[in-house]
Image (cartoon, rainbow, N blue to C red; front, side):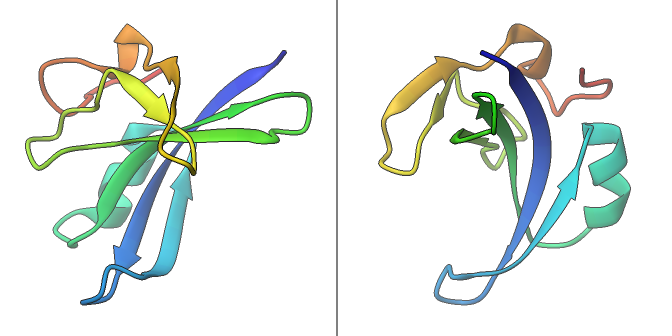
Length: 94
């Protein structure tokens, strides 16, 4: 099974509904696109031959990713690789 990762930033309204999603292949590519904007940032795990198994790891307010990705139902699916979980926002993601 193939696994790929991408970074996203979600712009939301006052109700938490997603208005726009910004996609990037790396944190260094995403960061300048969102600098200073109030967005939700996540690392997305795409698994399967056609990326049919998607799960998300949302950054907390301190710029840390959780230990596990969760799917749309909120179930843990896979561990977030260590290269994406430094003690601060990633400077050089994989």
